Figure 1 (spheres, rainbow, N blue to C red):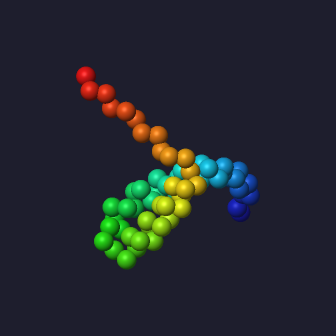
Figure 2 (spheres, rainbow, N blue to C red):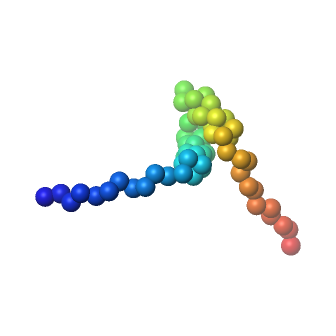
Length: 62
């Protein structure tokens, strides 16, 4: 017997793109120099156009 479960609620498209951006950034190192590198770069450019720039934390020197 399998219990019926409701599918998870849909995710916000912007949040989904943020997750995709993180996955792309994580895969950049492993695809460097491979045939997949240009494809990953194209996907990254599309996601970067769709999302606002990533906030960067300022590092202050003591």
